[in-house]
Every structure is written in structure tokens, then in C-alpha cells.
Length: 264
Image (cartoon, rainbow, N blue to C red):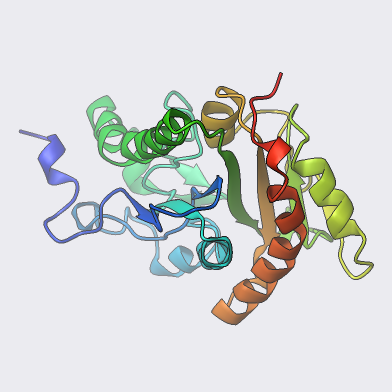
């Protein structure tokens, strides 16, 4: 059967995604695309030395812990991936060359080199699509109940990139819809101890990602993507602290009833 669909995840392994607090009361949905550094047993270590799985190349360090704290604080639903972006990057378009990266942040991924089309499809069908289908189903269910949910996507970024030391504690990424992003930047920037990036260290305007354009922009939902510098949230206590800072700023914005309507 070759790389048939039944062989990717072994019995007892985690599903492609998990939903925390599915029946939550909050009118927004939290997402975490790069929550885990796990690899399905059937793929071994992908040929990547073990040390790299504890680094950003494999996942967004601290992002899942921060997202869980936000979910608890706001009684919000959180959808997160269960496997490493080195297996498949759920924030990349299905046709993207970086979907199953042969090299990531300078680290070679031998198992992804010259990846057969059938294996690429297998990972799409069993890991990527189920995650996004679950998000779409949540959005559809909320809309069927007369709600227009907001989307808050939580990521983390490295403190240094290509020799540049990033000064931003938090980066707020957005494209055309500024309903959450702009007031969030203003509120966070009122704290003189914080350095806040407006579309830094990445920009939401290039639409190089997939999750926000596909789920939020396509459905005209209010949304924002947040990057937290990972050296600030490397422990559970630090993640809780920074989730608290972010949550304090988000609370009045997400409490505004007029937010929950389609854009445009």
C-alpha cells in the first residue's frame, strides 16, 4: 500500500489537532498553528538531530502555553496542532514549497528532500486539512448560531534573526482589518517598558501565511495574529506572565460587542 493513509499515525498517537474548551462562551477563537515539536512515530526523527526539536525550527516555543492561559482566562475555545512544522507547516498554503520543508532556518530535513507527491498528499490529508477543517467547522457553527467570531492567532518568534537582535517583546500582525490590531498596539504601547512591533518582526500584509487569510480574511472575520518573543515565554511561568500582559490589553477590545460583525 506504500504511503497509504492508514500508516502515518499509529494507534494511540495524538490526532492531527486538538480543541481545548470546545463549548466555551467567549465570542472569539484562539488558534496555535505551531504548538508542538512532535513527529509521528512512523516518520522517526525526519533525519534531523534531536537538539533541533527543542528550537524554533521545530515549533513556536511557549506559544501553546500562552494560548492555553488565554483560553482559560477568557473561557475561549483554542484549536492547536499536534505535530511539528517540520512534518507539515499548517500555516502554509497546500501548494507552498515550504509546506513540508526540505530545509528550515538553515537546518536540513532529509526526510523532506525530494518528497514524493503521494507522501505530501498523505500529510496534507491527515495533518493539515483536519486542522483547518476543524477551524472552519467551529466558525460555521458559531455563524449558524448568529455569531461572527473573532480569530486570535498566537505565535512566537526568535529573539535573534540573521544576526539582528529583535527589540520587540510582542509583534502585532495585520493586513487590511485593523479592528483588533490597531487598538491592541495602542494599548500595549502605553506601557513604556514594552517594545511593540506594528507588523514586526513579520508583516501580515504579504499574506505569506495561510491560517489568517484562509479563515479570517476570506470570511471577513475580525482577527489578529500575535508574535511573542520566545525567550520571554520559555517557561510555563513566563508564558503565563506574558499571556497576562497580552490578555489585559485584549480584554476591553474583545469585550466590544460592535467588533463581532463582518468587515467591509
